[in-house]
Length: 100
Image 1 (tube, one colour):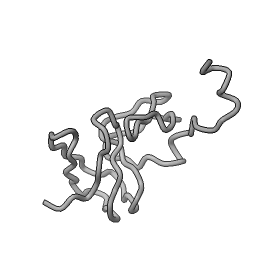
Image 2 (spheres, helix red, strand yellow):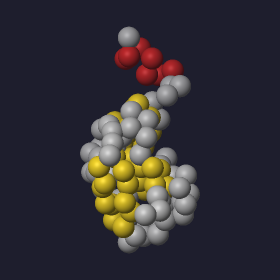
Image 3 (cartoon, one colour):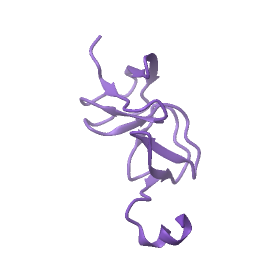
Image 4 (spheres, one colour):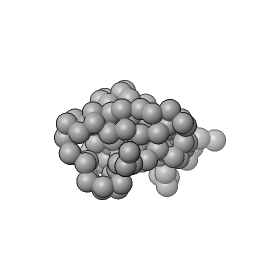
């Protein structure tokens, strides 16, 4: 079966599309040797992320086993994950004090 999306780490809650994907498409992804199926709720452009499971508002968005941002609103399984529903926590000087 041709891979349509990749998951880099077993703790990731997002997958990355390796081609343009269409709303309603069922995508099979390998998560640490286990196949997961996700039905897409919207079109996902090549190189963009979609949720592997529901992500609540203020929850961490995890890619490569690392936190890449925080959900600004609830994100449903199969939904596009991008700047419209996450905020980056990297390189933000206003967050530096909280991490120490």
